[in-house]
Each structure stands twice: as structure tokens, then as C-alpha cells.
Length: 373
Ligand SMILES: Cc1cc2nc3c(=O)[nH]c(=O)nc-3n(C[C@H](O)[C@H](O)[C@H](O)COP(=O)(O)OP(=O)(O)OC[C@H]3O[C@@H](n4cnc5c(N)ncnc54)[C@H](O)[C@@H]3O)c2cc1C
Image (cartoon, rainbow, N blue to C red; front, side):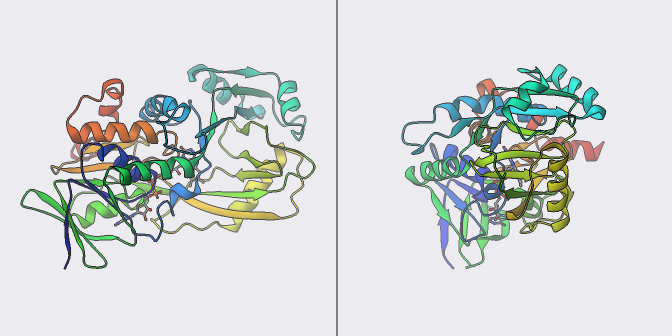
């Protein structure tokens, strides 16, 4: 049996584990354990890759805003290409969603009503009569997810970190002041600190470690790629309804990603698209956009995993040295740079500075307190 000693173990090499490992590795020797053959195989490789300021729980919004500067100017050598590409978001309200859109404008930052004629000029495929009102958020962007994920993994490796693939942590225990994780090959990784960044499997990892779950719920979301016909959609905004029933995002000149914005509760698994959800996506999109769909070019599904209050869980749990980095829901990409910095500050016992307001909101112990009450 081979034994490896580190200063911190991170379970899961999706974007959460990658940013955690990169930030921790500035002061610690880190081992990043990933069950799959490649890092990013699950939710991280399946996202829609968008940064939207007015999205998600209050803590997600703090971390989203705090991550913006990183996307704009990452450290030198972090990535070969820009991490962001501007793309406004336009919310459309059919008559029965007008009140909802007004509420979104009232509570959102930098979001305002836009004339339907302007939307029509941006997106000529918009069916006249679909929307009664529209709003735009100009300061949004596409994220180069692969570049960000690889950048964090590269940072961790450059600082002496180890990425172990095909290394599912199947047994986790605490002994003599250290956490130990045994992988399928029988190797044992040990460190005083362990970070649970296992995404949809976060509660399962806690159970393996003999700890209480926090009530994570993976929810399947579906997406597919269609050809927008004669339209060049490259510069289209991200477009969706205010009721979160569908959205589309340009992938390239002749590719449009369509999603029914579904949230189907599931157990953690290698999510696969359901044909019904794909059909719903196309139907809802076609009510708004005049785009004939001859063929679905590609379809996929991924798990967006939420805590019971849909906020993130970042911080130490009930057991010393066991840190949670889960519950990223639909905002794991846009929050990743600041989330990693927050996690590292909490592990180090440092003041997280501008992120301090997020600390109580992200505290994983809030779920245990709630269960006890
Ligand atoms: C369709 C879709 C669209 C999305 N769009 C956006 C978007 O536009 N913007 C945005 O910010 N976010 C978006 N998201 C959300 C984002 O993708 C997730 O929040 C993010 O990927 C979560 O990252 P993660 O690292 O927590 O999870 P994952 O990427 O799932 O990583 C967890 C890893 O842990 C590993 N693991 C599990 N158990 C073990 C174990 N015992 N031992 C070792 N390894 C283990 C798994 O194999 C997995 O690789 C979207 C998600 C989906 C599905």
C-alpha cells in the first residue's frame, strides 16, 4: 500500500476543485484526487459558460461580482486566450411574465428595459408578438471554461501540486490529526486539511467520511445545438424568457445552443439528455424565434447541484480540517475565481477581505443549525 503525505487534499477536479487547488497551492502542497479519467468530465465540461451579474443567490452574486476582474485580466501566463467575450443578456417577457420582468429590473444591477424593436434589430429571428416587454443586461460575457479550468490546474501543478486521475476516494477517515483518503488503487493520500469539491457527489463524500450530509440536490439541465438556418447568430445576445423556461446562446456563426432551463431532481450520475427535454427546448425556443430545426446536431445534459437554500457551501464543517466547496448550482463558472480565493482564506484562517460578506452566507454549518432547530 502506497502512502502519500500532503498539506491539503482536494476531492474532485472540476472547476471547484481546480480553483481550490490553485489557490491553496500558493502556501501548501496539494493533491487533487479525481475519480474520472479526465478532469472536468462532469458538470464543468457541460456548462453554458456564461457570466451574468444578476443571477443566483446573494452569496453567488457577491462571488460573481468579485470574480469579474480575474476574467478581465487573469495573471500573466494563466491562459493563451482571453477568458471572456462580451455578450449581453436579453430577457423577454410574454404578457404573463411582464410583472416578473419588472421585478427583475427593480432588484437587478445594471439591467434596464429595452424597446422590442431594438431586440428585433439584434435578433431578426424574433417572432413579432412573442414578447410584451424586454430588458437587457449589457455587462455580461461568455467564459472560456476550458481555458479557465486548465489555467487553475496548471497553476496548481506549477506550484508543486499533484493531480491524480482515476483516483476515486472510496474511503475517507480522520486519524492522528490528519485526514486520509484511500483510492481504488489502494493508494492512501493524507493531509491535515481535506476539501470536498465533489460536485453532485458532495454529500456522498461526506457520508464516506462518516459526516452528516448537508442536503445537496443535483438537478439535471439539458442543452442541444441546432443550426440557425440563414441567420448569422454570432453577435446575438444570450436570449431567454423572464420565467426561466428556455434560453439560447450563440456557439458560433451557424450554431445555437438551446436549453429548456430544466431542473430535474436526480441522484448523482453521469447525466444524459432526455429526448423529451430536448423536444421541450426546441418547442419553447420556436415559440419565440422563427428558426426551423431540421436536425439536432448535438445534445447533452449535466448536473447543477444546489444546497437547500441554493446558496454555496464554502468553509469548514463540523469536523476540524474538513472543508466544503459545493453547491455551485448554475453559477460555478462565474463564481470560480473568487470562490477559490475565499476557500483558501478560510483554510488559512485569513481575513477574506472584500469577500467577508459572503462568509456567513456560504457557511456549510448553517444547514446543521437548521436541522437542529
Ligand atoms: C447545462 C449547464 C449549464 C450551466 N451553465 C452555467 C453557466 O452559464 N455559468 C456558470 O457559472 N455555471 C453554469 N453551470 C454550472 C457549472 O457547470 C457548475 O456549477 C460547475 O461545473 C460545478 O463544478 P464542480 O467542480 O463543483 O462539479 P463537477 O465539475 O461535477 O466536478 C466534481 C468532480 O468530483 C469528482 N468526484 C466525485 N466524487 C469523487 C470521489 N469520491 N473521489 C474523487 N473524485 C470525485 C467527479 O468525478 C467530478 O469530476 C451550468 C451547468 C450545466 C449542467
